[in-house]
Length: 98
Image (cartoon, rainbow, N blue to C red; front, side):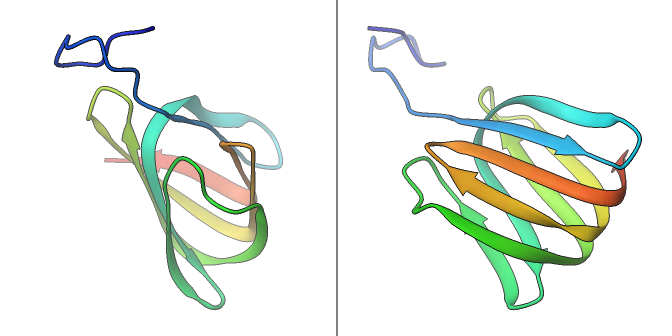
């Protein structure tokens, strides 16, 4: 069993996240949580989330990495899919922002 950041021997489930634009991979890695703006409203995704497909609204995708860091990406015109703790954000335009 793996150890989490606290080193107590408990394995913590994570998401495998990929953010891509039409021309490149913008960010990829393990995450604890992802929050994105869809046409239906803002959605938060944690490990174990039900499979889904959503249309992205223009806005930020906020990622909390497995080690607690925050990554923000601007993503426009695309979709988000969730399946088996894998999250793919596919956008016509995407970039990591400060």
